[in-house]
Each structure stands twice: as C-alpha cells, then as structure tokens.
Amino acid sequence: MDNLQTQIQDYLTYCKTQKCLDEKTLKAYKIDLRQFQEQTDVLDITQVTSHILENHIARLHQQYKPKTVKRKVASLKALFHYFEYREIMDRNPFGKIQLRFREPVILPKTIPLRTVETFLSTIYQQYRTAKTPYQKRTALRDIAVTELLFATGMRISELCTLKDRDVDLSDGTILIYGKGRKERRIQIGNISVIQILQEYKDNFHTKIQSCSHFFINQAGKPLSDQAVRRMINKYTSLASIELHITPHMFRHTFATSLLEADVDIRYIQEMLGHSSINITEIYTHVTMAKQRDILVRKHPRKDFNL
Image (cartoon, rainbow, N blue to C red):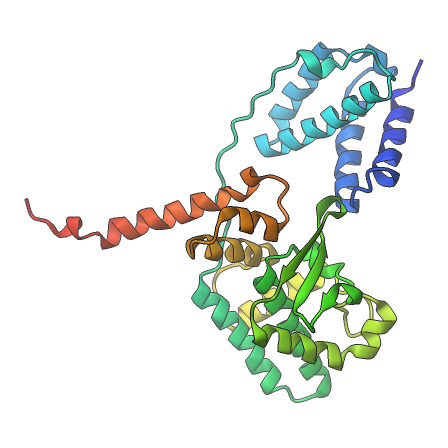
C-alpha cells in the first residue's frame, strides 16, 4: 500500500532533482497536488479512479477560470504519468478521461512604441540630471534593465537570475536559462543598448563580481522582480504615463513588434524560448486586431457614398 502523501512528496523530489524544474514550477506543482490530496478522501494511490479525478476536475471548474484549471489538471496528469512510469500503479486513471478546455483568447497587453520611447526618455533624463552619485548609478541600472527587457523580450525571472558570465558584451549576446533550465542565446541588435550595458557593468563591476548576478541592487544583492516592478511604476508616474506597465508587457511588445515587421514567427518562438509554436501564435491575434482597426479606419471604402 502506497501512501498518497508520501508518493506526491517523492514525485516533487524527482521533479527537483531529476527533471530540474525551476522553483516557480515546483511551487505550482506543490500547491496543485496538495489541493488534490486534501480534497480527495483517498490514502492509497491505487484507489484513485477516473471517477474520482472527474469529480475533482468538476470542483476545480467551480472555483477557477479555465486557464487555471488547465494548469492544475496538467500537474495531476504529470503526477499520474510518473506513477505509471515507475510502475507504482498498473493503469493511469487519466486514460479514460477526455478533457476539453474552451479558454477565451486573452490578447497579450502591449505598450505603444511611442510610450516605450517616452518611458526610456524619462529614465535617460533622470540619469543626465541626477544630483548625486547614488541617483546616477540607480538611473543607470534602471536604463540597463529596461533596455535589456525591450531588446531581448526576456522574462523578468530570466533577467533577475541572469549571471555575469552569461552576458558577453564583446559580441553582444546573452545566454538565457528559461523554463525548465532550457538554454537559448539571443543577440542584442542595437549598439546603443550594448554601450549602456557596458557602462552599467563598468560602474557596478566590483559588486557584480562579488554577487555573480548581472543585475544587482545598491546593497550588492541580486535584483528582485519586485524591485523591477517598483522601478517601472516609478518612471511610469514620472513620465505621466496613464497605462499600467508591467515587465512582461515589454516581452509582449518585443514579440508583437517583430511580428508586425514580418519576422518569421518561428524565429520569434526561438527568441522567446517558447516550447511550442502554438504559444507564440497568440501574438498573431494581436496583429490581426491591429490590422482590423487599420482597415476600418483607413480603407477608402468607408468614404464611398453609394
């Protein structure tokens, strides 16, 4: 008889040590699987049936949006696949369940390019007019962070965990460790961005070497994603920008701008580090929405008087 709680803990250990999943994924798995364990009156995994899983999924649909349910079910499917793979159970109860999710298409929120320019101009202005060395160094780092987010489309988690050794400014490339520790290398295509990153690195050189992370705070510790969010809010306010800007919106803007410039979507997929082209294709909905708006407002047919 295998205790469900023990087996789930063994699986989480396997995910951490063998699959090398990142902390955020492990945390989500832990939450999803603990919820299943607490809501299921089963102590032995061999007692879990398709009917029990269907009831659990039905409860999830009553509590959460389709996207969240889909993630929680994926966590469960991975768990039972592991059980089957390890021959802990003879038959996977998910084998008899047909799942269909109708998720509403939520378009990625992007930043108008003129707003990106205004945002960056505000930080550069703060850098040029800084009254103290502390203010000047802070603005320099904030410029480097924002420029890299927009230049590469990297995730905020990837930026905050970026190591000094992964940044090669001599050839303008960044080695990024994405979800599941998957590596990808991306080229910085703008010389001005490379120069500002070099200036930042020269100014923070000692602390960067001591910390080993590329982006650090004034105390010499790794820069947190909360600090980046606060920084973005600060300059959004200073620039009198009404749009609420998040770090991830720079990623969306990066991808959408390239797609609108006729860059092949598979190149964009590779640069974003998406495991599937289906994930990247969400940006085609954004460009189609823009195309529709252009044709409604600009096409000469609207002025015909028939």
